[in-house]
Length: 232
Image (cartoon, rainbow, N blue to C red; front, side):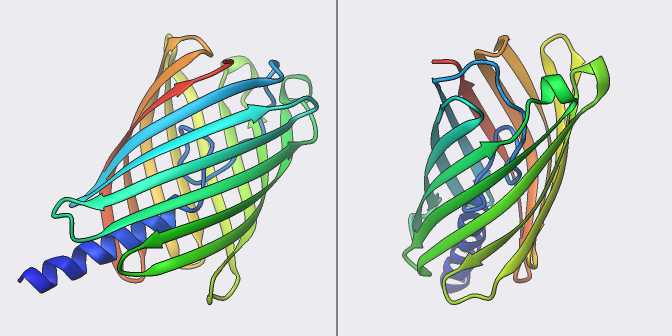
C-alpha cells in the first residue's frame, strides 16, 4: 500500500507539474489573453496556492509591462505531496507581444513565446518551449471577454503537441467575475470554473476555482486560491 501510495503521489505530481508548465494569465490557468492594459511600465505580482489530492503547490509570478503591448513574465512553482515523498519545481519565462488595443477595436491579438523547466525527484528534468496565438474578444459594453488560444508545445524527448484553449469571463455582481476555461495540449486536458473578486478595482484581486486535469490516464481534481496585485 505504501508503494502504491508513493506511485500515485508521483503520478499526481508529474501531472500537476506538466499542467503548471503551461503558464497562464490569471485567473486562467492555461490560456493567455490579448487584453492590452492602459498602464505601461508597471509591475504586477500574482501568487496562488493549489491542491490536487495529496499534492500541494505554491506559485509566484511577477510580470513587467513595457510600452506598445510588450511584456515579460516569470513564474516559479514548488510542488510537494503531503507525505513528503515527492517534490517538484518549475520555472518559466514568457515574452508576449500584443498587436492592437482591444478597447479601441473590440478584439485583441497577440503572440506568446514561453521557455520553461520542470523538475521532480521521480521524473527528473523536463524542458518546454511553447508558442501561442491568443485572441480576445470583448462582449460589447458588458465588461466580459472571450479568449481563444491556439499554439504548439515541445517538451524534452517528446513529440510536438498542438495546444488550444477556450475561456470566458463576465461580471456577475459588482466587482465580481465568473470565469470558465477549457484547454487541451496533446492528450492532456484541463477544465476549471471559478470567481474573481476585485478588492480594489484593477489593483487587488482574489480568485478561487475548482479544476480538473487529465493526462496519461491519470485524473486529478482540486482547487486554486489566488491573489493578484497590479499597477505596482
